[in-house]
Length: 183
Image 1 (tube, rainbow, N blue to C red):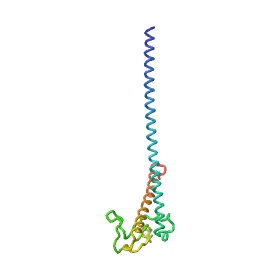
Image 2: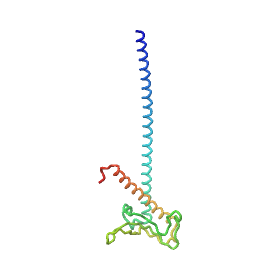
Image 3: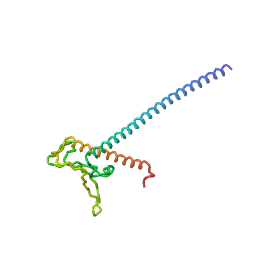
Image 4: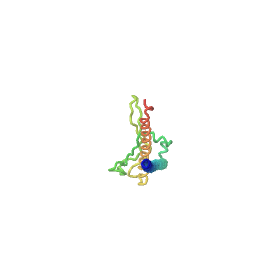
């Protein structure tokens, strides 16, 4: 009988030890799970902050583009602000925008903001068409502050256009991720 009692005590002791191990494992798992949750929440917050930050940068950019649009008189050539983004590209004649000649005025040239669109010709072939959105006279007579506003407008327009293109590609990628939206 004593032998059976000793076995029972030994078994009971082993069971208690196993329960403690399980409880310890469960505690570790719970802690790990909680840590993972916190990391995910932190990552989500960071992503949200980036989105919010990106949205505020974009809002500020659009606000400034509108100010320059009015300030430079582009509204006279293109009265609907939203329609200036239908153009495929925007260039500047008379002022360098490349890294090596950025902001340099080209002597004897005229300053213009040129919008580029593609329209079909009589044969239906797409052809580039340049549209002057703003003419600012001879480069030599341009005030430095005005020159900076012109450059800023073109760069900020391009920045907004990049945001719009980014949205377009996000939409396309979402379609690829959902095969039922494809053909």
